[in-house]
Length: 90
Image: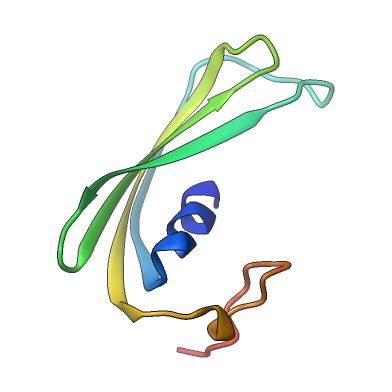
């Protein structure tokens, strides 16, 4: 989810092709987690993003890799800025 929200800044309509998640440490409900997404490759129709999730001690607890397909351009009129849900139906 964090990579999809981050990639909304590119103003592109994207759909997920593949998601891979690696879990390294267990976490509790009391832990404070921070997720950071980074676009590592931007092709004409394919985007690759890496996600790191760290706990309050800045220890890496999970890592993700996501591949997206670009359907076309997007604008802020096409989704709710509060929830990041699309107003479009596919």
